[in-house]
Amino acid sequence: HVSTSHSASKTCIMVKVKAHELRKASKADMLKQLDDLRNELAQLRVAKVTGGAASKVAKIKVVRKSIARVLTVYNQTQRDQIRGVVKNFKYMPKDMRAKQTRAIRRRLTVSEKNVKTAREAKRQANFPLRRFAVKA
Image (cartoon, rainbow, N blue to C red; front, side, top):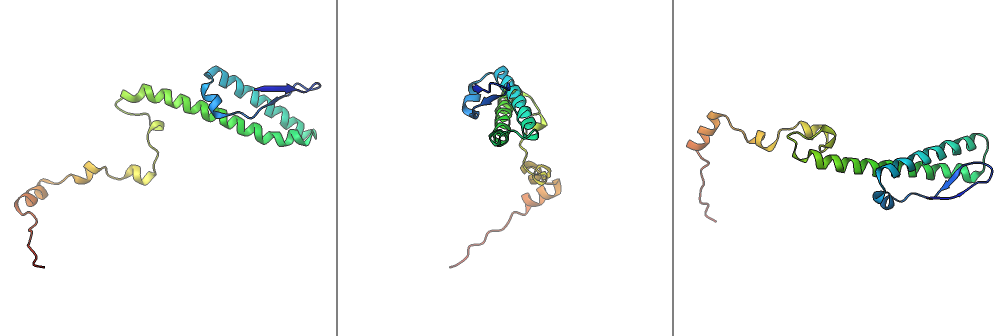
């Protein structure tokens, strides 16, 4: 994704990273690109402090978003691979479970809600709800 480089400084101008291209890239390529982007961001920040060109200062945002994009795709691919491995485990790792809300995670499951005491079960069996025919 390197297009051109400045003659004086060694900063390389990166084209905006596209997620669909990253998905095809290997793990090593993504990590290398991430490293390049982080180096470029450091150089751009130095340029900002030393009063560099406005175009460099404006580019900081693009590079930050590109880093986020690379990390997002990298983490998604990692999680997909792990999900395939832990599919047959008895317990799923906590970070792979559905997040939901704290209240939902703590509430009773459907089976726990439907459990009846022996006394309640007997009472329902012996005295079922009575149905009446209502004349319209």
